[in-house]
Length: 390
Ligand code: PLP
Image (cartoon, rainbow, N blue to C red; front, side):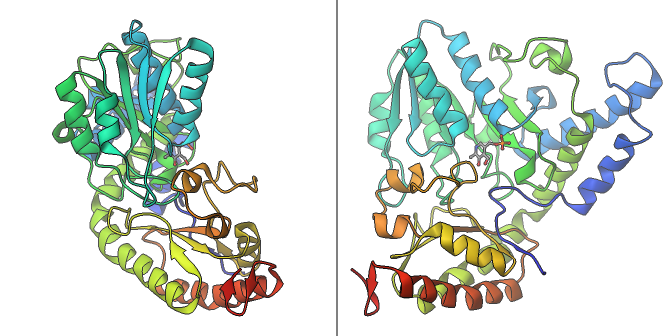
């Protein structure tokens, strides 16, 4: 069966060019980059090239790049390091729509270490309450940590503006740019960001490789203590093959930024417009403008998201009913709940997240498949009668 993959915020296909670049380092070039011989040195040289490519992708210096095992480790490391740098400061600011990699870490600090955490709320479009955010900054604030773009709705926060405010107030600023990367330009220097997380598998590199950018001058405390790798900032022999793949993926992501913002945006808008036209009782979750060009979170009244997904899956269409981490639960996601999306449509919300590999023909297949799926589910739903929700 032909697979139509529209779950790119969960993970992406490894690009052919990335795989090609990695292959020799799975095979004959298996040296350890820390070894004092030419065999290891060849890998070290290739890793240096990868570090430069990642740095160029976000306008950082190569020394400011720390390779980690995933986005979650990058997020955890940033927060851990901030609270170690300022042990006397016991207040943290974040939002109530963050990924669990940030969210749960803060909840644990709150419960076990007595930190006061301000979870800044969002409005029904998923936009941050900036007044509340700025008013909550105090001398006791150790870090502000906010995602650049939301994984479920694609809604973007004004990170550059917030980073400027944090700099003015002398508070450390971390952003989880895991979903924003490859979809909008990122310039850490221009934005004045102190720490930034990336994850390889969201930008056509393999799973299990992440990056933490740490601005020069910040006294970083490692989460993983061990060897001298990553200049002592992250112990453990490097995942050289995936680092090399990530370097190539960053180079490609830079080149593809225009395509994502033209072709992919057009496909997403086409899918959105047609679905809203053809399916009554449907609505988009999140701000229509301040949104990643590839993401469409759309709610269908009076049906179950899980049932929609199962029926689409039978047609070879891969989408998501929320973030991969929350699927499996029948509760609407914490993001849609924070946005106060009405229960009737939050429950029937589906996320389509596209990449430059998608085509218009695929969008037409999704539209053709989805219309009867929703109709069938509504015919069985006790919450739908005479063409409307009851
Ligand atoms: N942060 C965001 C916004 C994400 O979307 C994800 C993954 O879905 C993560 C963090 C975690 O990244 P990883 O899967 O590489 O641990």
